[in-house]
Length: 259
Image (tube, rainbow, N blue to C red; front, side, top):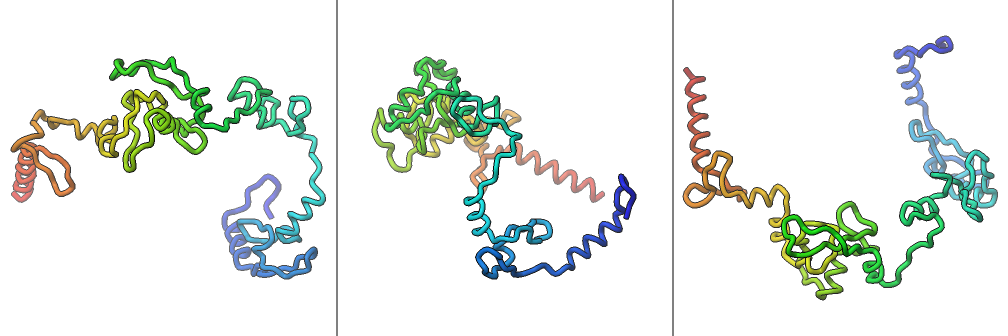
């Protein structure tokens, strides 16, 4: 054995690991509570070696914990809100009061519950939003201030902009998507929403495909139209002048290498 404070040699660690790997692990075990012989997977095990750590099977262990719940360790303090016995997690508050503090600015604020999604849409919309940079003639955006999925507003399981469109203009036709004319995905102003096909919605965006489709000349200034336009088997547009130039340069390199 190595001295205290010293690291075990790597060769010795490999031998111990190999010996543990060759050790036959129990395939079955008898639970002393339910008196049944069950496979080792029915007991709580240690993941690296698969060794059984608990004497009771999982159902019996859960039943035992329900009958004799563990006592609080005393390390975690209770929530500072009077009448709340949950342990404090952040800012001396439990998760419930802490989330209310973040959402409403008050840990004692009642949870917002709406039976009608349109009531939630009306109460969580700021109608004094900014003007669209590309199309200011559309008017101000109505900004959704509720929860989002990172890009679009959510009202329960529905999208806020789709709910606003349906409430103002009717049902969305099958196969169509809602396009934000203002290019603000948090806007729920019905005047800024339009039902279009997926292709139209993609080409109106600011992504790579839309930029490529809007390109009229190649990087060398040649027009991507008329006899100079070449479309390959995958539907990609290319410049014929640039293709000829690249072909000549490749042939010249081959001839130079052959000499």
